Length: 94
Image 1 (cartoon, one colour):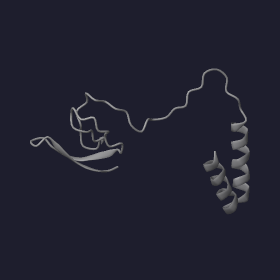
Image 2 (cartoon, helix red, strand yellow; image 1 turned 30 degrees about the vertical axis):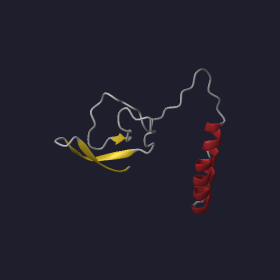
Image 3 (cartoon, helix red, strand yellow; image 1 turned 90 degrees about the vertical axis):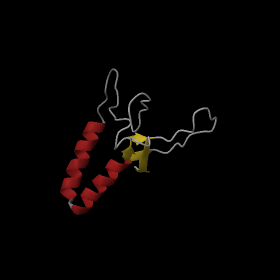
């Protein structure tokens, strides 16, 4: 919640009344207790789908050659272009 408190502080600096109103509403909402099962809604940054064909714009990981015991590259890369004839792709940082 640090990001929210920073934003509230910025709002208070530019408009004290608006900052106080936002802070009051924030405190009222954050003081409520939820009952039962609560699931946080979020979109995963990366989900591995090994059988799905790679398309331009996908985020991928570079794997070591088959049969190798070396560890793969843990970074995520974005596919910029696919060359079907050579079975290669141009990758760029995401």
